[in-house]
Image 1 (cartoon, rainbow, N blue to C red):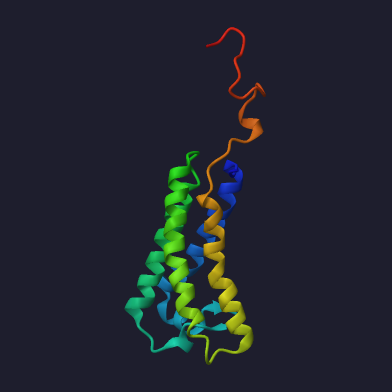
Image 2 (cartoon, rainbow, N blue to C red):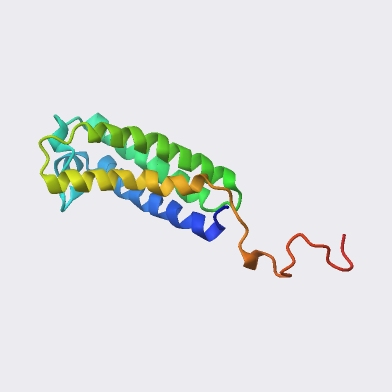
Length: 153
C-alpha cells in the first residue's frame, strides 16, 4: 500500500497554502492576526489571552517555514522529504490541537467546533504522507514493471 506521487503532492500543496495563510498574516500583520484570525469565523487568538507580538510573529515564521518545506518536499519523487515534512506538521499540529481542545471555554459553540476541525486538518493531511511512495502505472511505459525485457539486462 502506498501513495502515488500525485496523491502525495495534493496534501503537500494544501499544507503549503495553509502555512502561507497563517504564516504571512501572523508574521506581517500580527495585531490583525491576533484580533481577527481565522477571519470571518471569529477571533480565536484574542479569546485565549493578551496580545504578544513576539509570539504571534514566531507562529507566523514557523508556519512559513513549514509551508516552504512542504513546497520543497513536493518537488521530490522520493519518500524522504515528504516524510520529514509530514512528521514536522504532525509534531506541530497534535500538541497545538491538544492545547486548544482543553481551552474551548468562552468560545461560541460554532467557533469551538470550527476550531477543532480547522486545527485537525494539518495533522489529517500529514498522516497519509507517512505512507510509502508507489509508482503510478504510467511511470512504466513498457507496462512490464520489473519483468525481463527481451534484449536488456
